[in-house]
Image (cartoon, rainbow, N blue to C red; front, side):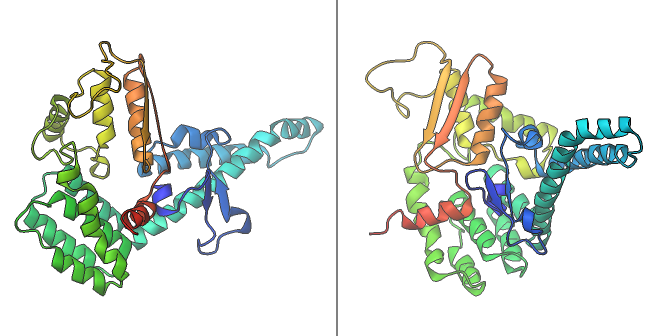
Length: 321
């Protein structure tokens, strides 16, 4: 979420455009090696992060009260001994409160909760075309919704309903044009269909035709229990593929072996490298697989770590002369 809304470059997040930002907070570092709070919470969702920050602030306030009185030599000694940790907590509170505050501002300002809910329903739910079309028209027409967020919805719609006879790309193209989307970006839905349409995919991305047994059981269980968090329904395809690989169930015609060597036992070390770039969500999916399969070590990397803007730029340049 931080990378999508603010951008992360070499562990650094620029907050220079945040209204009334303090000078020392215009750029912050998010590193698991230097930031205990970030290391413990980097995979938490937005709600969980808010709760954790509240606990961090309460810890800070408790320690701050301990230093309100420095009256004796013993008090001074205690203060000096604990000051480095106190200062560290103070800095962590300021940094993470600033980041979460800016995320909250953007979420409210740009109707991101509504957008995220619809995105999740498009890619992971059972939304039919008619319902999706009406909800998208309402959101795209909302002046608080940015042109980039509206475009992202249209791109998901293009892939999800690619073969639907009622698909109406023209209406959405006109709505995007009225929102001031640059003309070249209006070509992206067609470019995306040529890049990752159903004809070019090895796997049924939306599970509309065939699914693996594990994926089917996940969907069945979700339908019985309900969705615990409507904003985290989507599971990256790489998780299902690596899970099948761990269980030695990948179909060889679609994923052939190199050099004639066949895998007869379950692998213990798996390296996934994505040419063109991966996402932090895919990194989290692999993290979850590692927790669920302690006997197997999975590592993922890519040529870059994408957010929506960087992926769309790469998509635009993919077939340029």
